[in-house]
Length: 369
Image (cartoon, rainbow, N blue to C red):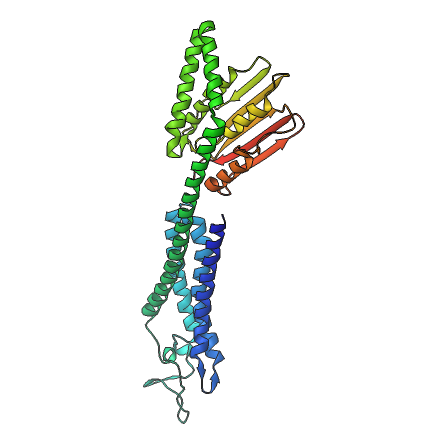
């Protein structure tokens, strides 16, 4: 996250330095032996004004709002309109400032030899830009070309910064993925879990062979998901729900009727791609720190979807005053927030509620993007 902030600061410094150089150039070139020609400096600054406006509109409106949100058609269309309008505006500024003088804007009347001073009056020492009319089409094309170069240079810098930020983000995600997988294998799907599950299945063989067979199948699915499906770094909501169901069914083998587990999923799961094992730490903690063998307890898990977002809600009873989410050695809530920040930036929400008897987590994730 600090790397992204530094990139943005560096980008801003580049813009400030470039525009400072551009604005100071007229000051240096207008410094003559007779002193500073501030009227010419101000005139040059007015010439830069349309191109500075182009930069501001593109940098702070068009690129972040349309290009960065994958609305490329709108971006290219609006950028083309902006460049053309800037060409017209710059040309209009030239007429008003006398940079492309017509009769109405020239300080002298037009005679047989063109624009010339009255008899007896010395010629006016005009800069090259003031010495005669230019072709309107050529001036418009020149101004449009400059506007296009301003937009192109600005887009090149922003794309470079965006590419560097994406590269750094991918590196951080890869590191976080490795850390999460290691922590998950060490803590969430520990040897104790498999040992207890296998012992329960062994005890079921003589009591209920069919249930024992189903439990073996669920355990194999869970292992397949851990070893293969989650390796790519992303999975579907359907596979994640199947994993959750298998995990909960195997956990139920250890509990008595005093433990109530309620699950709620959409009747038809949409085809949504999400990071694998994103909610497993919350689920494991709900069982580990919410289930009591001495009193009635519960775990409630709800998954909802709409056209824009995925809602994951988990509630559990508390067997003591500690939720266990930030115990040393566990993934913890803070690490989950870190992973969500890396994947979704500011496009997700996480809400934590807690009272004396219950603990609740609500997570809302965007479906697209």
